[in-house]
Length: 198
Image (tube, rainbow, N blue to C red; front, side, top):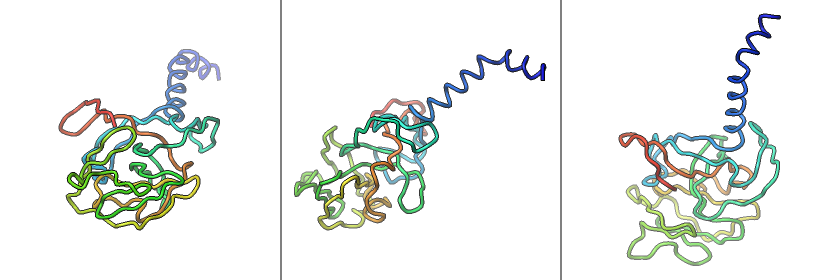
């Protein structure tokens, strides 16, 4: 017992640092590795992404218990969330929020009757935080007839519209299922360390 106390005393500062890092990763910030090409060209397979876990409120580390703050995700945010199909952690873009009437035709997004892209450049969409580039290399994926997003729900889609299993297939996602907001790509295969905002 004395030997254990000596070891703990000698390594107390290291243990405190480890505990602080564990709490920070559990409740403040973390990273995510992009598994597929569903968000190309914004995110590429293997990208390492810095995520902010406090963007939409505070949660008790390593639990789903909310501690306060309730900023809802906004249209255009790239978020990490659990799939309603099987609980797999996914990264997609929020394309519509509660109350929006959303439709998708040939990969083009329409929100409240307004196209987010111009007919002459269907591969670029405008969101409140700026323009995004789409990939229509595999087509536009499934269409979606005009549908209102229910209260407390979000519609998620990939930027590679024809290569994304998203809300057009698994339906709306609860706001509470959003784990974090993706902020920046900090590492990309072939390029090394980068600092690309999302």
